[in-house]
Length: 159
Image (cartoon, rainbow, N blue to C red; front, top):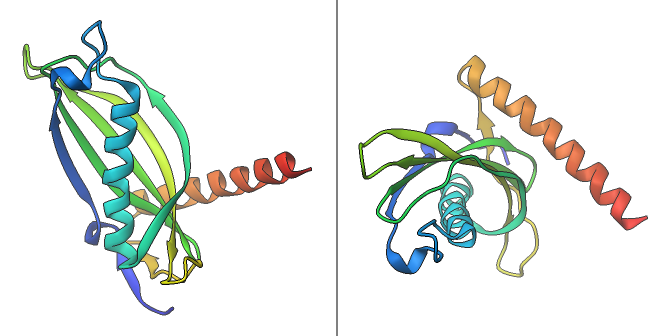
């Protein structure tokens, strides 16, 4: 596939309000609910880039950095870091906008890998990534290194 797409062509910003049904007995957002929001948001980025059906292949390095409370506003910013032949790495930065004072803090960061699939459920090629600046180049190289580490880990698990 010779087509190329830029990072900004598939970026997504999603906003959620934390409701009572999203929280545990301490008033903190369920980690699983946040993972769901992250996966949905990153999946949209993958579909926008590939214009194919996609499946989540991996959630890597999911780090909860800050608690998110009932009533807070959750902002998810997602973009594509890396594209292989059929796979894409999406980064999602999650910000907590505190309802009490409006301050915003990075609450979570995650890297997810999606694979584009055809109508038979088989991996299918995706457009290449058009790198426009040094920051995108750096993220691309870091994502390539994470992919190599995941592949090594996969081999270790198999043996």
